[in-house]
Image 1 (cartoon, rainbow, N blue to C red):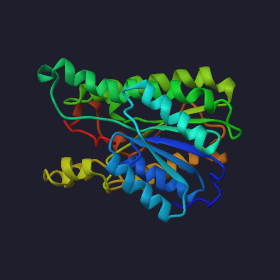
Image 2 (cartoon, rainbow, N blue to C red):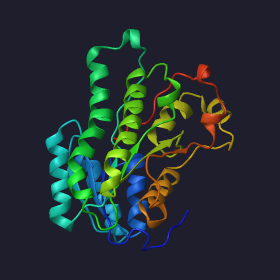
Image 3 (cartoon, rainbow, N blue to C red):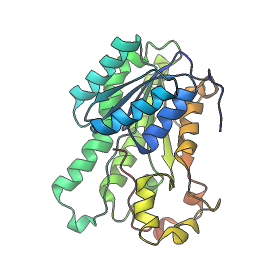
Length: 271
């Protein structure tokens, strides 16, 4: 979907895990809609490549190396955004980590790592961005990337499923707490996104592509641009009256399979 070039004009957005995958897809769509960008990631090499591509599009964009598990890193990224562009209007908590391991075989550290990146990282993004978002002249936007697996149960990925469920609860709470400050808080739940390393590794290279496609009513994997379009919509004037929502972008997959039939799988880590 193509939005007007000024759909996000004047807005400044910070995207964690913005150097690749869904995060970078959102960054490109935001840039095309006129936003100024701050990309945060632990991977400096990915950031350099991503910023180069955004600047080639004519976007104003900067990179900040940050680990969302550390509040001071996220706080510093927000400060850099405000110091550079004068304000912050959009925070996208996208950085995530995941890997397949049954709970009986999962180490306490494995659980902690994913909870720290996914759930605690989202809290850090919210806490750090709040002072800036509440002063946004456009009405602040806080978006977190979730998954439909959060509500189904996720055999093989209990840590990520629990973290994402926690994120959904957190965002619904913030909807109530931050609404009076004009901040809209929503989640986006992607399905299987074909132009990501996660889907290539988990489905295509494992010979499970056709099986997974058979569970999607629309018959095709999604694209990062599909998730990005949802994010642009929520952050534009068209999304001004939407808060507390979970926007599912999965081609209908979550409606075509029972919770008892969830397959063991992993999603793409955003970093």
